[in-house]
View 1 (cartoon, chains in turn cyan, purple):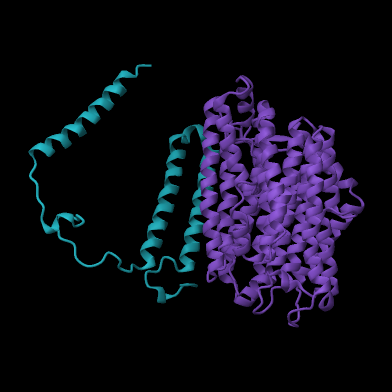
View 2: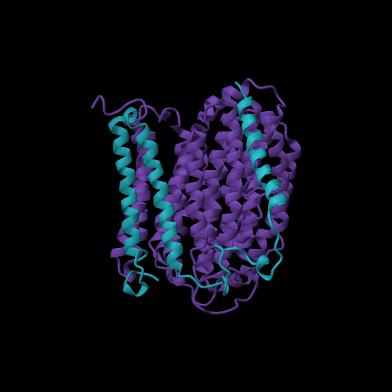
Length: 124
Length: 493
């Protein structure tokens, strides 16, 4: 096994980063104003506190996204080996998707998909 | 149909996992049915769960008594339904059923009417059953996580209760950490053998020299992860906190069923996968067993909260179970036999004691302080006598089932020449007798703090009758259990 291309790659990466830092250190301008120490966010001076209350709904939707997104990865894993697994594998994936469908029904009935909490659902 | 099944999927494989499939279907079914039930009909969820557990038990028994192949290995050698697995699965199913029985009234008192409770119990049981059968690192790990994730949620099930939430958080963080350690050890084992199957790992490890440093690293991380799961010292810190904060019925559950599941993976990994290095891991287990018995027994002496008390009591029982594993490492079949008998017996006596504690939970009184049991003899003599039987059994006094469990542990230690461990175990049994009798003193010699009547329920009554019957029957006539455990010990030797 030839390892030197990997070594060269590391050397190049480290060299590139080092060059960028060193060159900008010598060529760049220096400022020391009031805003220099502020947290940087898109070039705009920040205002207000970051500790704003967000609705739990954002968190819930994000979690659902992550869960269902991850489940689709498993379906990709099946798709790659789909032909070798044959019909039996196909049925297994159908069962898997069926369970996913059940969880969706469950979340729906729970009211977790309602953006407006007062619109129904079993629990807040 | 010829093309329908190929080398990865074979029809008998699905028959072998039928009990797990049934339980999963019932678990998912409860989630759906729960939406259709009125609040006063929520007990039907428990009935559904019992039905599912019953079907699973019947399937297991049918496999054991009717099948031509009691030792079946399916899914390309990754799942094995042998007598060892069936025995532990039956213990898991029975323990879960008893927990369902004692949960109904507790959930009513706590005003928790969620079907998810029973669904999670069943899914957790599915995880444990796969743990008992898995012969592949990936199967074992996924089963372990299925079991553990359900437990974390159940521990935090009293959502309005701060102690419950705190317990769930501690349990989750430490559990996730231990899973990481376990995975690290598993990845090294895969590195040695190029396979995740335990049989291949055994073959690959047999080629390596004794005292190989990398094998030591793999073994230590693997064992550390497993010690977390079975709550052995020095990885026990989550136990008292999780036990105290969890709903009492869940404390009963996590003190019994996951121990059975975790010991299943512990025994299979050590006695099959790491078999070539049994002299090495035996040293680790000896040290941990001594520390576990010492800390569990001495810390239980000063507890005033009953659930914490049972947390430490569980730790000390884990110490005794590890003694059996030590004897099994010397190739002694009685060691494995002792562990299996002890797990069975411990499940019933501990659940019985918890059923009495749940009875103490009444309006406005949590009933988990030692003083809440005071004067039980005066107000409910039957319950006090039942508790006395369970405590005698936990301490290991004949003619109760606990004595049979301890007897085989000490027998196997003496057969393998570990006299000092046997002496230590007997000495700590005396300490255990002292702290179990603190409860007896409170029950029989102290005045009751209040006169709120205790209400039983059909579920609690059935659970108490079953656990009492098993505890006494095995103590008096242990022959059938010993035979059953002997056949269960065969596949690992």
